[in-house]
Image (cartoon, rainbow over all chains, first blue to last red; front, side, top):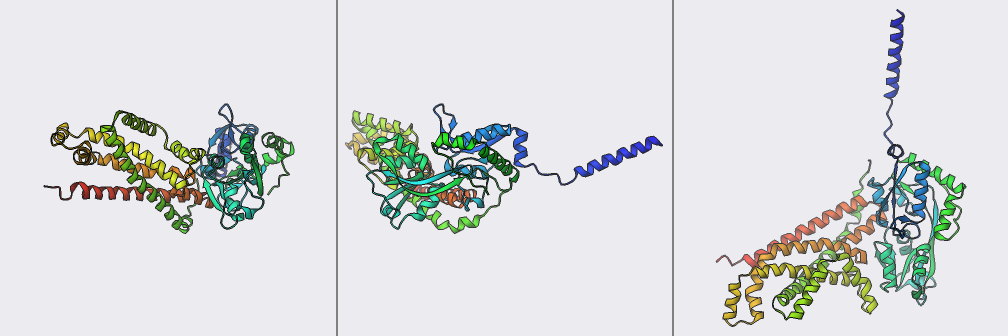
Length: 266
Length: 223
């Protein structure tokens, strides 16, 4: 009799646990997948100094890359870079080629319609850059000039709005082409981040390139696919901790030469 | 993975895509005509011209056919200004496409020219025709007919290859697509539609080439 009771108790237990297991089994989240595969796939743009560049050894380098490296290290997983052009930063993420894009993507409401932003991990300014001899002191001076901008960037979202009537805006797919257009005289001025502008000016002293106007200052942050709330929350936690311990500021200072402004959160 | 398609955004911007497609067609069509002419001239000079010109054409063909089209475009757009020749993006693109196609077309034509029986050329000589007359009357037409399919394929490839001219700010279909997808973030939708448009254009060109073949080589030549 006792044996029967025990058997019954066991059956009840088994049934109970099976029942609880048949509770809506959570679909595997992207965060689960990353932790299980021990691999974080990060889309980066290595054509965008000083955030992403290819170092002298051909390895990715820059502030975005440093952030990605530290993030993967703290997560305890292997890091896999998915190199994309600036136009590919959102498509690569949405297509599932990467789990997160860390490529200085400034926060805009339009972009937030298709991807989810994590909290900002840095800030950038967009400036109009031209040779010293080019007379641009105020936005109105851009009329009649050819201004080169790069597609899928903050400058594309802001410069056409502030440019006066008669400005000839010329679009390029990659910032490298935009820079070449300025250096070869195919455009009179270009719009890009102040850091990229500094790299261009420092690298070509004979052209006497200088910033003329500041178009806007914006914050940028990592993006994840819609509904990847767990991953977003983990990244936000990481950003919070690394803002507190100064890691983000140190990375920013090392690559841009500037102090990191106080980062807002949302 | 979960993704909701929003094709309505694409249809809102469809007129812009059409403008881009029109420029693609225009650039390609002009480059096809000019490139064919360049190819024929080069093929003639390569088969009948004086030695130095033959060598120069060989060099041109080898350089163009063994370097990336993208690099050629960059040279026309970014390097020519340093020697004082500043071309706008569309002109630079068209020129690069023409010169690129000229090299391929001349090489394709060469094989057609070599396929013309020697006896026919010798017959032309025996009749006292000049070199140019022999080329024009005896060689060119059968050669073009022989290589027509290969030439038509190269033309289509050129049209598809024109997508890279967006890198130098020419606003053809790919450039417009890139701009729209980067401002609306509906990349799948825009690339799907652009792919369809390229397919339609390629099939359209192919159909016109078939019609042209019939018009030029077959009509009234049954006898």
